Length: 217
Ligand SMILES: [Mg+2]
Image 1 (cartoon, rainbow, N blue to C red):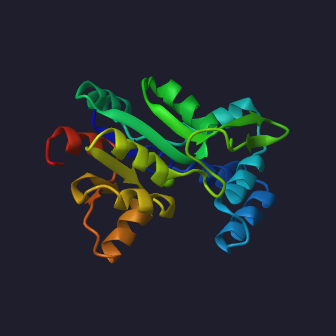
Image 2 (image 1 turned 135 degrees about the vertical axis):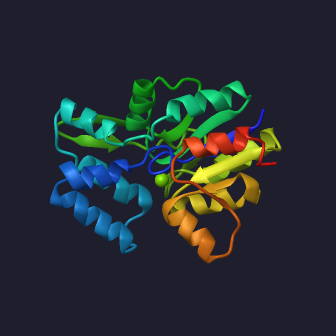
């Protein structure tokens, strides 16, 4: 069964949860943590974890942020189309399972495997992400080792596609052939700058259309 490994924030959805936290509900601690991550003083999991924990809102406010992740229209239908065509869809995310599963549930998306760090939200603590070393594909730096997810997929089927938007997606994207290497945002600009052949997309449903259309062999 062919496998699509896809990033979540900014790839499956049009916005990143950490960005929404900083933009709408974050305390100064969140901004400071992200600055320290960008300066190389914190690991990715430390930086993004501190941003999530800086979230100060009630349940309704947290739900509103999940809605604001804003998947493109047609994304749930595109997942269903891929699945009907025999594709396995795997989400690999350096973010948190808490908001990924909430959004998938709300969208009515079923049968997708999610590899992301677990976490719990409470108004007093924010979203506390707890990477689990006992889970498959654990990474101390990113929470989830995306290249390991791609390697596992390649071990199970010769046809693997990858979709992503950020620096955490670059290595995984390079592990699949150009016709199945889907990129948007920063990753698309970086690959173009490095003259790495890829398929650029704006909205996630384009990936399903490209794979099912049979162009990606
Ligand atoms: Mg992303």
